[in-house]
Image (cartoon, rainbow, N blue to C red; front, side, top):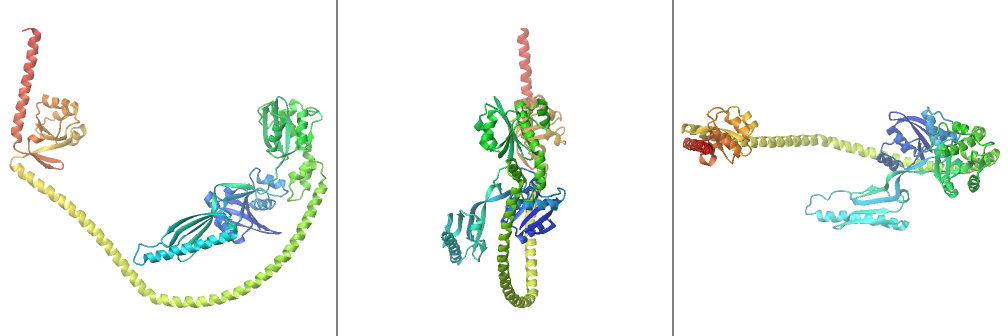
Length: 611
């Protein structure tokens, strides 16, 4: 059986299954189509383009692995309607059933490319089917038992492969008591390896074909296409190649092109049946090439004119006049045989390669003799088919008898199993209520345990918060007591920056400011703080020289933290009564420095005036 398929719309497909003279067709979804293929088990599934059915290599591999059928892409070099015309298949391109039918018939004529995803190698993996668990006093004995079972199955598979003479390589991971995993790479396709995937209580075996790195398309037929080659020889030689349907295959021009090189170029594209030239008297170069292929030589009755060459090649793009002349020669030869080709297409029956018939007619073979050979071939095939049909009927009758006996045996087994099912249902019903109550209690206990865990976590968080707040309350109590004893509140800045000053808007005149990190303060930032008319600054580190000069110029004392006694917490602090004594000393130092600076300036002025 061969199945052709064509896409209709969104995830809908038309399929036509052909077996002998019978046809089965339908419209199915993508998943239903895959199920249908698994049920019908056709020899070939043919489609115009595999990308219509599969979106990735993984999907393609999964399909081929599960269906064990040959997938054929019919159209690659030519469109589906072109191939249908070539083999005399009537087809309406707008009818999906016609396209599916054409795909099926073309595949039956060995037209298309087999989609190949797997290599001719098979991987067999033998491993444990269960985990060995966390351990226990019986684990070693259990581990030895499982690994010994894996080893036994692995050895049995190797023995089967050795008996068949199959080549393979192996990789084994040994463990206590035997092996835990064994891998065998067999140098044969999966269909030739009589081992399937299976599982036992302790062992699992996986058998799979080894995938290729990329999808390959392998031609069903190795026959080459028939061609017409037009040649324009000279210092620059040009060759134009078209097929018998008039499609341009290749065109090329090259300086000092030898006869052997031209022959190699033409051979790469197929079999030339006509070698054409645009000259009435063919050049010797063209005659040599014609003779090497034993092809028919075509030359016009009169040399082709430039206007005629341009007319013949108007719809093609060429690089130079040489390529134009070669292409014009090939097209002129095709036109000379066009009426004969149309007559052949009308008379050739479906399934016959029209291109091959055209080539034979060009070479001088009679059309009737070609069809006579075909009739003889059909008669031989029919006789062989009748013999095969008789044998098939005998095999079918034998199979029917076997199936009837098997059916009776299975009916008895079904009756026994039904009795067993009823007995087990009664047992399940008696255990159901008890089991449900047990599950309900276990679920309730788990929920309570989870809630207790959540509450304990919340209690720990609350205890931590209470401890922190107690510490703050104790610190505030000390600060309040300190205020009664003469301690003074100071404003805290984390660093000497514009953003920090703007955030602490409550800093005002007469305030004492504690700067935790004064190192980055600039002159402008220091002036910004001084403009608030603060009383003094206390620093925990060194202040920049420029910022310090600003504070000195505003007569605001700078006091280091180790010169006074500080207490505080996050965002607040107080200074001891000793601050007033330090403040007065610093203020006096600033006054003295200012007087000294004035005296120095006055002395410099006197020296400058010579007084």
